[in-house]
Image (cartoon, rainbow, N blue to C red; front, side, top):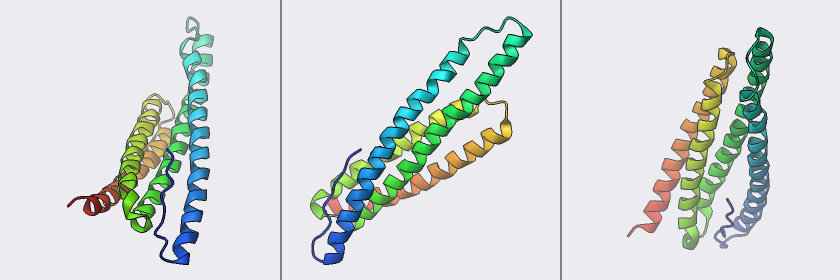
Length: 169
């Protein structure tokens, strides 16, 4: 998601904030793109593991070991993505406060898209952790995802409310 909102140019501090936020946004966009690539790549070993033979006890054990590793890797990528999305949401929240009133609806669209992306990434975590045999690790990953989902929901509610207050007559 790309957004470059102008900050009110009333003060020099606002101009510095604009430049800083744009740098951070560009960096976050790059990291999110890398995470999406990692997420796609991390699914390949998992998909391959599902196709492994399971006719003998040895094959079953080998398949389970490969699956265990692949499920962790396939869960880590969307968790990393969720962290970056949460950071983007915090930036958008800040932009909704100091940004140009002309472009505030962009903050509303951005925050809504981020919440949808956050929920989507969490589904990828949960589908993989559900299949993990290491329940302690799975619950740890689920806890992290749930915590980020809750924080994201709060940020989205506050930011979207602020945007609605600014755009509705």
